[in-house]
Length: 311
Image (cartoon, rainbow, N blue to C red; front, side):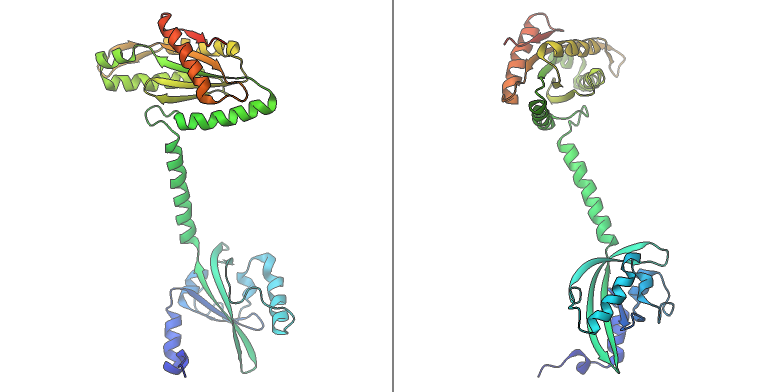
């Protein structure tokens, strides 16, 4: 025959073990009066040792469960309500002395009867540290996701984000039978800027061009850095001809820039832009390829200009 814990240890040793357990422990009687709390339970509720003894458990429960709990205990003891709670681990909340509802993990047990009274016990674990860690991890994950979609130099969306936004814009346009135009903007003579003024100045140029494009774009437009000195433009609700007017505004905004280097020199910057229609059923890469060809014509037509892809 296997010995049970009470057989092996005196009651006072078991009591000391439970008193100092890391999990909060509480015992109630069949009238839902609190008969025992260990030190962890006192810390969890904010009450000193004897303050809760003999008090109804309902004072610690959420308001909407007070009557339900007492009725549940009565019906369970009478045998008219099979338990869906006892022996199972579930998330719950108890009321702290301050009034705060503390999220907990709870496992309640039927301890049986002694001297004509029925007793129920519960082990409780404070979920606040776990929730705080989950919230921190969620925040870190959101930051990582944001970084994965953001160009570190300019703060603009990167190519991955641009492609994801294009999918959504195309879906909306298909529902509304609207037009969408894509564009590729390229900084003119960027290699010469890097060679003459240095890569740090080149980075400053890219940041300021990106900011100028974002500021001059419409609220519905998307501007992204595709890589190098190339920027992607997503212009919903606009045919290529209409988009050309927006692109002219973007071109002019960049042409008005005077980027200052660290040693006080001023860099004049211009961009060339190629536009193409993103027709329903077409893929983004195809439209960008047409926009690239229009950009090529803009470059060979003198730069600092906007060209629309031939249909």
